[in-house]
Image 1 (cartoon, rainbow, N blue to C red):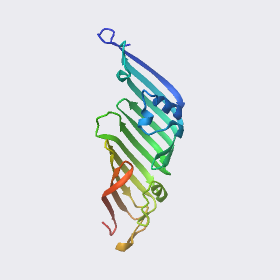
Image 2: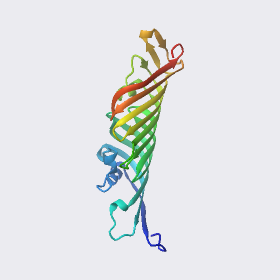
Image 3: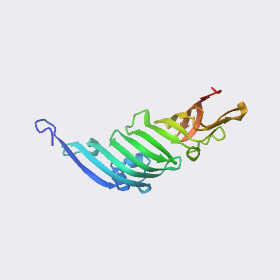
Image 4: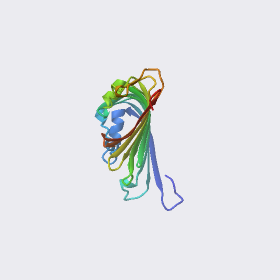
Length: 231
């Protein structure tokens, strides 16, 4: 209890919990919290081990409402597995750090998604009146197969591995913008209609700006490829 020498006193309660990820998500999805539901996460479709630190801070009031309770959650989560997290694909082999309070959430760390090993940084805003509700960035190496699994199979124009630096922003009205930069040195590029081809091992870069409505592509507003003999 703090503020004993002031008009208002505050009570802080905290503790550490070690549990499975499904149990931790079930706790965070308590009807008064609902965080897992807000994020589209289903405890039954998850796996992993979590070390969670919980903090509750609230005024010492007789008629206290839950809206007056401040919540802080931090967690280290190992062996993360989530089914059909986005575009119908699973996350596996994740080792993530999570920070969450009543205003938002941030998750960072390495995962395997659709067969690609990525370092992710995912943030969600929980406030009612915000323009940007979600930001997501990922860096790592993708393959032809991993791109195809999420609906972005660029064959025959691009075939082979590429390093990607991806940024995604979602607005409250559902609009989204995906921006991606690709290092295509190890991929084969073929533009037969331009009589141009790049073999693996030759430097090349690419970029993509894609407008989305929800998870559905709407418009490509930027697309470029630059390499030897092609720009």
